[in-house]
Structures are given as structure tokens and as C-alpha cells.
Length: 357
Image (cartoon, rainbow, N blue to C red; front, side):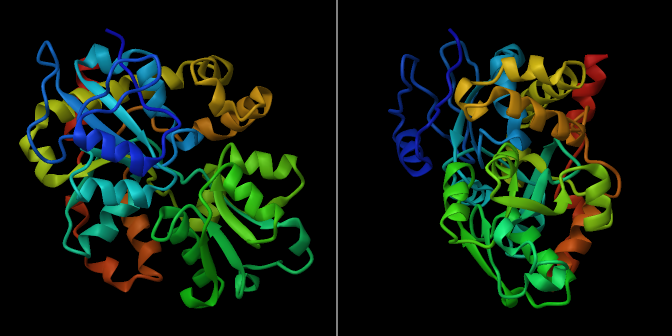
């Protein structure tokens, strides 16, 4: 039976359906019941079921999650995956800690932030080593905002409060010599909700990813002020690489279900390798039509700019955790006490890479 994925459903509604085990997807079979940190439910032939909430499935930075499904790699790995849509990584983090989903698709920086709150989660697959984000400023402020210091007093759109976009906005404000309290982060999501907020002057700037960034430029609404999308731009803006797109899970879950985690690592490592050997056009052809935002050519162009951000092996790049810690510590001093070796593991992707050879 072909695996199904829930699309276009509000995260809260979808979670309620997952918890009761009665979710249905249009013209598809019922998705799995979320198992949180308990034993994964068995499918008809003993296939483990896993629910993963992703902070924006349509964002190119989270492309591997849907691509793995459309390539058939979850099924090949022997795991049934339900992907749950949410607009921000912060929402995925909350759902994970509540036991409503088994894994979260979000940025690695959440694992550090959570450890300071006594919550232990770890990245089991690290899919990218730059944020894939841009700090964009409204064109109406082009003559006013010239340096990072000029971010003081602005309302900056982020996907959600406490999200990675929020943290990156805070870092850039502080880097400009201001305090974190010197700007107002406003949760506006991504895609059309963010674009509408920029059009209506609800926000002065935004930290956002593709394809939203290209749409803002195409509509002549905003310009890139800080590039955290390319490797060179990230080096200049953040002083080094920044592990971003990850699959993270609670440490308790990873210890209790290493076989399930291994299946997921196998699927994602194979997906990353496939991405590294195929063209943007071929990748775009595998994505749902609605992810292309009505402009496939623009999506492909944006994809070309973002493909270099992805790892090819799912491993945590050397030096990335230390740089993420340094950046977050600029406005969250307690991050300095985080034990980095507890925030990620390469155990599962190392085995996946070895087996793929």
C-alpha cells in the first residue's frame, strides 16, 4: 500500500486527529497514530509507524522530508511515516515534547535551547550546514536601514516566537550593537502570510527562506539585507557554518527505539545522496504542485541557490555545534553551559553511509 502524508491541514487539528488515531487524508488511507515516546504502533506487517512534525513542509530548507516520501525511501527503509505540517519549528518542538509526535523537522539550534530548560533532544540526521535564511528588509526602508545597528526599533517578522528565525533575528540585532529587546519579533509564519504582512506594512523586515524570499523580491517588496542562505554569506554573517535542517528526537526515544531511528536515517541519507546527483529540475518534478507557489521556474531558480546548503551524508559537520553555541550565547548566555555531545549523534547516519557502500 502506498504511504500517505497529510497535507494542507492545520497543525493543531492534525495533531488532535493523530492522537485519536482517526486521521484521514484525501483519497488516501489513514495515517498512523502518533506514539510520542512510547513503543511505535505496528502496521499490518509489523512496520513501525512514526509521526514527524515539520516546521513548513513547503519550504525548500525542509525539502528532504517530502522528497523521501515521493522517492519511496520510507517504504524501502521499512518505516511508515506521517508528516505533519506546521509553520514554525517552535511548534514542532512543542509537539515533540508533548509526546504528540515522535520526531521534529526543525533547526539544530532547538536542541541547545531545550537543554538549558532541562529537556534533552538530539539531532539524529543533520541535513544542512547553513540556515538557508535571509534577513530581508522592506523596500520602503531601503534608504534608512544601512547597517545592523539600524535594525533597532524595527518589527521583524519571524515564523514563530522562539523559532530559529526568531533566534537568527535576535543575533543580527545584537551583533549590530543593540539589545535583544531593541526590536519587536512578530510571528507571521511563512509564505503568503508573511508576504501579506510585508505588503500591509505590519513588519519592517523578516527572516525567511525560499521560496518566500524569491517571491518577496519578485513582488518588489523587500531586499536581502543579511545573506544566511549561501555558504559565503553564512560565513560572513555568522562567522562559520550553522547546522540547520535536522531530524531531532528526544534522547529517551532514541535510546528506546534505535531500530526505528536507523530506518529513518537510512531513508534520509539515501534522499540526500539522491539530491546531490540530480538537477534542480528533476528535484522540482518530484515535489507537490502546491509547493511551487504557482511559479515553477522561480522555484527551480530558488532551489539552485539552496541545494549547496544540504549535506550529502546526514552527518553533523565538524565545528558546526560550536559555532551555533557561540551565536546563541550572544543573546542567551546560559547556552554556554550546554553539553554539545548530548545534542546530536552521528551513530545512525554513519551506519547508513557504511551500508550504502
